[in-house]
Structure formats: C-alpha cells, structure tokens
Length: 145
Image (tube, rainbow, N blue to C red; front, side):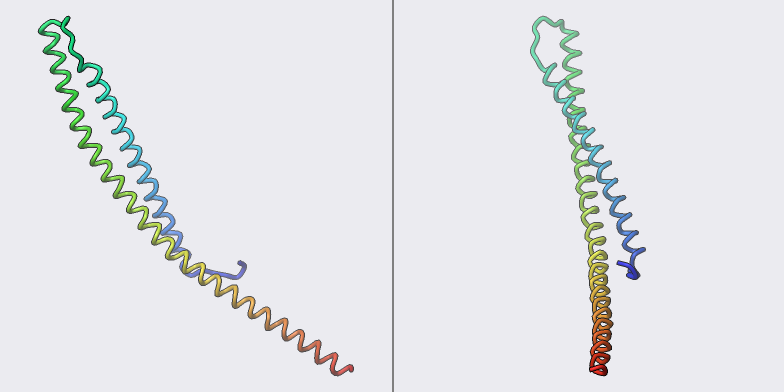
C-alpha cells in the first residue's frame, strides 16, 4: 500500500533472517542424522551378512570373523548413541525454528494490524473528501436552483 511505512520493518527483517538461519541449521542437522542412520543401517546389514555359521572355516578364520563381528557390534552401539545425539540436536533445532517462527509471526501480526488501520484511515479520508465534494455539488445546485 502506497504511503504505508511500518516502523518495525527492520525488526521483522531480522527475525525473518534468524528464522531462515534456524531452518538451514535444522536442514543440516537432519542431513547429519540421515548420514548417521545410513551408516547404522550399513553396519547392521554387514553384521547380518557375516553373522552366519560356516563350518568350513578354519580356527583362525573363525577367530577373525568373531573379532570382525565384535567390531561391528561395537560400531553399531556407538553409532546408535551418535544417532540419538543427532536426533536430540534435530529436535532442538526444530524447537528453535518453531520459536523463531512465533517471533516472526508476532511482528507480522502487528504489521498486518497497522496496515489494516492505515487502510481504514485512508478510506475514512477518502470518504470525507467524497462527502465534501458532494456537499459542494449540492450547494452549487442549491444556489442555481
């Protein structure tokens, strides 16, 4: 609307920027979580593949297989812990985005209310001017007639 100036526009712009930053941070945290989930799935798949009894193996091969399975099991446990930490980070980022959206929407609501008040004032001024013109026309017609 022409002539409308919102005094808190800089604040709104700052809050929009902060919300965008929070969204980018959330996306990065989700990406990291997905990478960790893929790593965990790969470790579980390897564990399932090699966790098969094979009587054709020598004692040394069986020992190497057991060591490898133990390493995979430890890796799975560590990756599960890492995944839980990343889920916590994602939830924290999600909450941060939600709070930033609330902050932005608060200022946007103020802006919308002020814009509506501005429009009403403009409509009132226009109506006063129209009424004034109508009064002049009426007075001219009254003087002629």
